[in-house]
Image 1 (cartoon, rainbow, N blue to C red):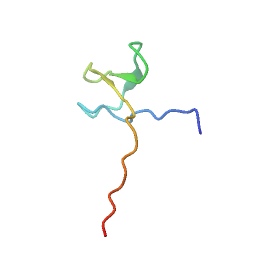
Image 2: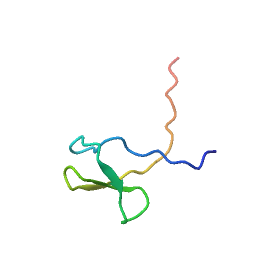
Image 3: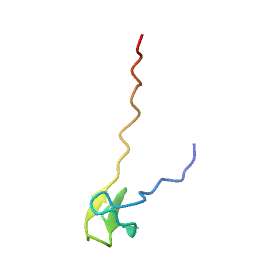
Image 4: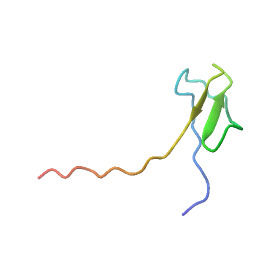
Length: 52
């Protein structure tokens, strides 16, 4: 498995693309457009419902 991590492309609050990793912790990002910080966390895969 690859060690590279995906980064968010835009702020979920304002849509700005000027994001920087935060020093607050792993997966935390700061938006320079609206001055908000948010966390991106992978929860897991969902099973696809099987319809018969």
